Amino acid sequence: MFSVIKAPNHPVFSVFIPFTRLWVVERFLLSLEAMELDKPNTELIFYNDTRDEALQKALEEWLQTFGQDFNGADLYQ
Image (cartoon, rainbow, N blue to C red):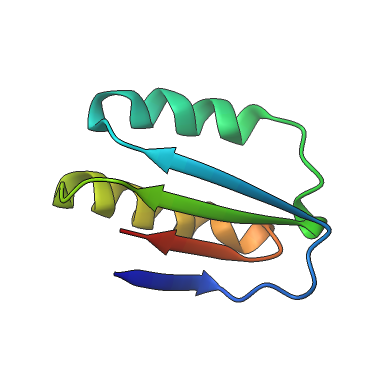
């Protein structure tokens, strides 16, 4: 499954983040929010390497909320 939350527009940087465990997602995403990234030039690519629908939902909700700040946001499962 592939979801484009926000289409990229020639990003300078791409950040690929694989996820496999729901228990670490909240803490990781809080850390990601706190990072100093060049968001207008950075594309986020989340990869859910599970069939865990709760994990997929958490990632999708975060990207819907914060993905608009980035130069592209994709979610793979």
